[in-house]
Length: 181
Image (cartoon, rainbow, N blue to C red; front, side, top):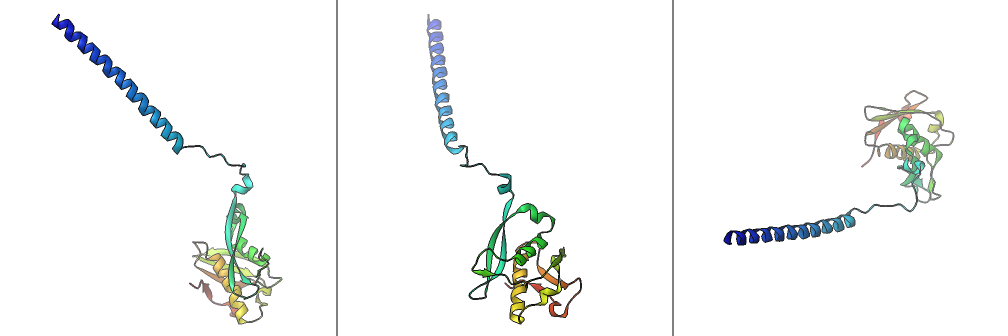
């Protein structure tokens, strides 16, 4: 009888442990599911993002303030694909086109054509037409140069800028320009 009593007690204890383990594991898994549901909810955008929006990036361009004449930055959203081939040429082309804001004015003289812009040892070499030299005075020349240098040195691979007029060095723009910090 004593053996039967011990066996019955062992079986009852084992059943209680199994039932308790079942309820404990069920509570834990319910808590985990509740917490993960809160932490990892899917985000559904209000509208689908188009391929065109996916390719957009921001660039910083520098123009003159129409009132003060001081350089100011303007952020423009452009298609990133246009920057893949030659970002330097594209940024200068945007400066030639001028600002979007009516509070800013473009500095690069009218009629200036950009022949090429390429990176050589962290220096962008810009080749432009003669019209680039049609600036009003030395102060205006420095603003034009700073507009271009500030715009291009926003790219981490660019440290300086050098200008060529129709493929040749010009005495008016003979130095290599570095961003003023």
